[in-house]
Amino acid sequence: MTKMAPTSAAQLILFELEDRSQSHLIALYDLAPRFVFVSRDNDAKDKTARDKGELVTKDSFIKSVRREFSFRGRNYRLTVQPARIDRNGPPRGGERAPGAAPDLVEVEIFPSEREQVVEQVVRRLAMDRSRLSLTGENRDKVQMRFSLYEIQRELRAVNHTLSIQDIRESLTILARSRIIISTGPAPEPGKKSRGQNILESTAFPVLAIRSRPDLTDEEGGVEETYLEFNPLVSAAIRDLEFKPVSYAWLMKLKSPVSRWLYNRLSIEYDTAEDDAKPVAISADEIIKNSGMNEWSRLRDTLRVVTAAVDALVDEGILDRADKEYTKVGKRIDAIDYLLTPSAKFLDQVRRGRRVQKTNIDLLKAIVGNVGRPDGFVPLKTADAVEMRGKRAKRLLADAAQVSLPLNED
Image (cartoon, rainbow, N blue to C red; front, side, top):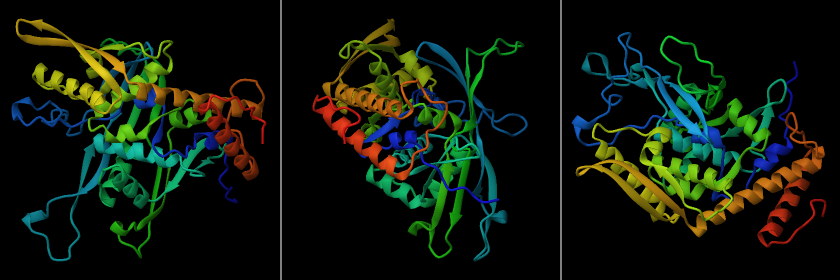
């Protein structure tokens, strides 16, 4: 059978973005608490059950993480199943013979903050010109080619340092840890769920890493790497359900809770009628929906939430974050936050709206004003070049508040 060449499409061109300070937010997928973060509490008494290994059952496997979260007024359920990978284990008998290969130990591990950052970098690279292609029998799957060295270089550029081996392991974890997102709240004990699975896949259902033996890992010796995005991400690209957000801010924010909150605010203000209206959110809501660890002492959990909120003020995303405390005696039982966005953040939201609208208008100009296409719209090379040029002109005109017709050369 002759192998078909990768096919480009209008939606893949519209996913591109030359401004490297930007990334794309895929709302439901990026707001789902898909990562399991390790507690950094220094007090051993305050370690969570997960840190103590209490997720290991009597059959010696790790239980899946099950969470509930809400998004745009709907309730969802999330299940994260651990990846199973090989790691170097201690030598048998306490010593390893000179030149002997290390003994491998099979372990189960959840995607954590390291994998969150690596996936974000992969998404940023996916927005480079001609990076994506279509694959699969029906040309409905989105594939990306890259090298591990490219990821390492991009991580260094945003002040995150990982070895090639760590990057390879992170990608493997993302490719093997299964994510299940369903509608509706958790079913009652003994009753069958009436919800529907929206996604049952891994972050990267297909991952191929082909080594070049002439180079070492640290020289970028693992090349010809490609991966396939999961169906929820591919569908979002096909349907243009993505919006630009600040990649620079996401990479500067040190807390995964801060990154989640930034994404949440980006969605909140994307649909808000009054851009400047503050957003009210409780600590309980942040804890539940971000997937953060809870400390055994509530005050420590609330301290981490408050630090994550204050980080957005420090980075200029918020003008201020007012706090209202609910106390029982001297003990703080709850905190409600009133978040006031900065002008800089609102400018970012407006920029995202302009890009979204331009993308939709350009796609409609190709397929006709008949609504959303059923699939990816194939493009020849010349048409892709023309589309990029039209979009650049349109965005430049919108930024200058000048209307430019889509068919202008």
